[in-house]
Image 1 (cartoon, rainbow, N blue to C red):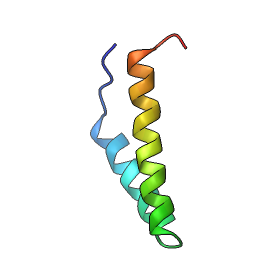
Image 2: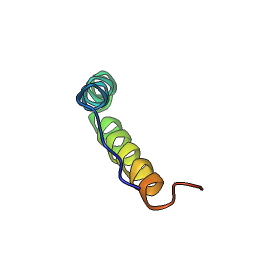
Image 3: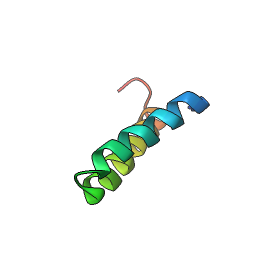
Image 4: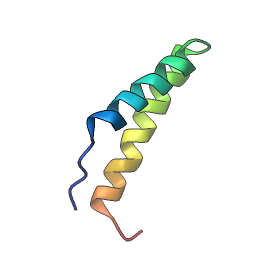
Length: 48
């Protein structure tokens, strides 16, 4: 399965990360990495 990120989704991830980064830049970075890892997992194992 191939995941296609629409531009709006990428924008939203960036907006959320900026919001989190106001209090904790480290947490924002971890959240972004975690989000992309989950999506990659969905791509590899779509039925899990």
